[in-house]
Image 1 (cartoon, helix red, strand yellow):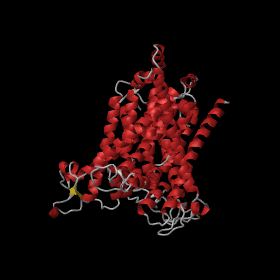
Image 2 (cartoon, rainbow over the protein chains, first blue to last red):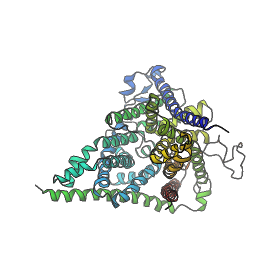
Image 3 (cartoon, each protein chain N blue to C red):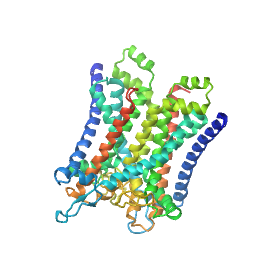
Image 4 (spheres, rainbow over the protein chains, first blue to last red):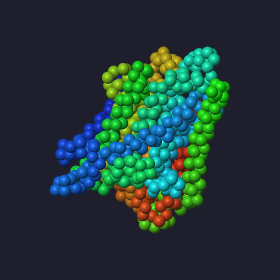
Length: 297
Length: 295
């Protein structure tokens, strides 16, 4: 029989090994994607300028034709545009529902809205994409204009998908406010609405900002739901009703059609690497927002 | 200028309106999927294999693949996630290693699933030569689910009351005995709730699986239990298109004349499963809690 002291040690080191595994996985992802992603600059000799700032896309063009052209600006601009627009649609509803649950209807309202938010999270992204494709795209085509496959369709689908992130984290943040400040404000004769606007929301601001950054991170990373409704045309996202592309959608579409080791494949890894760096940037931003408060987990 | 009383009323009305709109949207979404899907779903649709290039196929193998991948993923993530959760909540101090573990969990949790998918394409499919397979799919799903599971485990363990821990330690139990016999047992209701909810997410994942588990399935012989034969459903090195991936594929390839009916039916099955995961997690959570507290 193993002694109790030994089992204690074994337990500690096994769980520690699991924790080290997480570090290993994260580092392998970072190194592998970085290694593949940087090849376009180191091996294929593409300049940073012609990757980030050009919108000319023809990775298969031979050097004789002046190629390869790997301007990723349309994808980067597409991801930024669709994510910011989705945030614009989603934030008022997300924060509104959070205020509703934390301040206005804290009894049955919260009891109903909690599962509503969880179900929004539970609906798989391909199902959002399919509803977008079968309902939203024809609706836009018939009543607004264009082909339907558009920046507008993509950002509406995305806004529904990021809504629960904003709503649930903002609610937690509002509910973490000490009751004293609300009572203090109400006791001074301030109305409830003014208390919410002037006291409760500002006090919960770091949490609300965190929810918005996390929602943006989710929007940037979403692939299939977006890819199904934006039309996948390589052009700058200059119109709400025009088709477009994003960083995730080009990876989704092209990864299987290109051969590993070629320029047209390498550039997809570069785009994935940028996506990875952006997600690290968001984490950094959240840490900065919450610096000085209790560490966010 | 409007009086503060009036603006108070208006503001309250607006917040109720937002909550009602959001709830109505959810009901409309779920109602629409079920309405469209239930017209398609019958026994044949749920069990038959898909037919290429023609109408009338089913989604049987896809449902099986989804369940198989989910089961194997949970088999890996539950112990690993519990391990990390226990380490962070019970053993970890405020050292540099602890900080880097936390940063890694946060980074992993916010990585786009398509990026994790192509990482799997590189490492599991290409370098390790597992090909588009059940195993490659399970691996990326594990990477995807690990940060979620860790958070669930750590929260569940942290919420166990201090008194229980101290009582156990005061009785002479070691730290490890306290963790396995007292803390984990007390954390079971919230662990189970969290695990089932995260299972719903794994079940609906598609982006990470396109380039790992693949978008095809060989003809499966459901009476073949030899895990080494290619057509066995339990062979780990065969491609395994899941239900969520199938919805994406029929829409983007459009080779089936009845693609939209297939997507309707498959979406409804996915939604029903997700609703089920939600309900079951709620029920078992409260059932276990009542049982434990003797109510």
